[in-house]
Image (cartoon, rainbow, N blue to C red; front, side, top):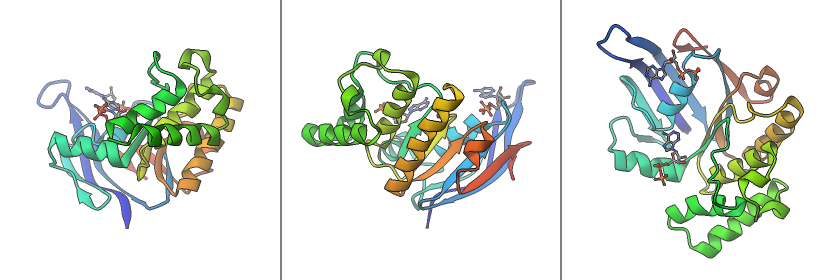
Length: 223
Ligand code: ADP
Ligand code: ADP
């Protein structure tokens, strides 16, 4: 009962040119329901490429991507976009919140894009913000929030549509160590409470050790 299954994933850039580079050379990865997996890799090892393939943002040159039991390897853009919206949550090093909208609105908007009724979307945004300790910040715009607060709002946004799998790329990499530790704790609590599966890339080995399993990406393969 895997939430994500990657089989034999290969990815090259600049194919057929002198600049061709093979980033992934046969990556196999299975994430079970409720499992939280750390992805550790030196910069340039292909961590973002792997997250983009798993997140249906990029297509591999070979291999299979199965999400929630559906083989989406050769699926149309429409199906991939639908799967991204319904089943996946994304978090990045930088929050990428919309600056003109409040914290609450940033969590409401992706739900409206999924045809959730406004009142229900607003209630969910309020509950999520309350859960991460930001009820009093609901009507602030991102610029008025601290880095740790912005990242907590980004977590709420990623979970707004109740995804099956969270994909996170250095989710606390832009924060100072103490804030990073605290904010990462909030993320882990949210993930555990919702029974969500997660693939979380991090350079921080202390954070990686708090997950169920640690995978290292090295020379295009996982170990
Ligand atoms: P990481 O996230 O581990 O730092 P990336 O997945 O971003 O690594 O990149 C892995 C390698 O692929 C790097 O050498 C990078 O320069 C190269 N690369 C990434 N994206 C592209 C692209 N769109 N075109 C060409 N090369 C790329
Ligand atoms: P929408 O049109 O509603 O923004 P998308 O299909 O563009 O829907 O995005 C679906 C999900 O994929 C969103 O969570 C978005 O953050 C993420 N996403 C889309 N494009 C990219 C990208 N190029 N890099 C990273 N994440 C992306």
